Image (cartoon, rainbow, N blue to C red; front, side):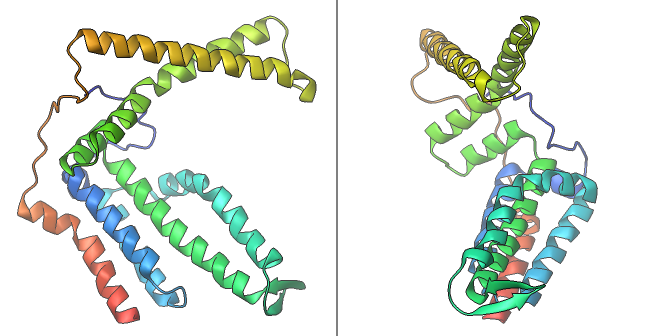
Length: 251
């Protein structure tokens, strides 16, 4: 399985979290997310404990808080959507800082923000302690459908290639005096996007034919066996099991 080139999220290290097999971490993060989603939104203290658990994992993995905070920018669309819900929501209204807000909308916004934030932070910690290629190996070990793993593998492998193609096209446009100042330049940008799609599609066809000529039969070989001991499974499952205990107390 080819290694990817995008490692901005990964922080090399030798912590106990880094050393855990990828399938253990994947299952732990998935189980933790399920527990968080199942937690009643009214249990504020439970979400606080979940946050403390993730902080403990970050400390054990030696992941700086700044690294996590910077990567949480991906959550901004959810935050904006959550802030709109109380404004446009129906039902009982209450006044907050001079604004009339929907009470059900406030509960819904809190539910989205709390659970989405915990899920995003857990995913960031997974990415910070596991290389992308190794995550895919873990997915294979967990018997994730082979087609999904292959799609993710090729996306990881060729993302840099496509981005570099975009950069060259942008440099070519700008070298000819193009400047995207207003909507009048949209047709040129659209033509560039179409050309990029065609080039990417043709590249995919060439790669597929090259794979077939080398004996590809629908499955990629697994180049590394990543086994996990009972102790490693126990360490990885500490997070979701602790969260499950909190959920049990909150019900």
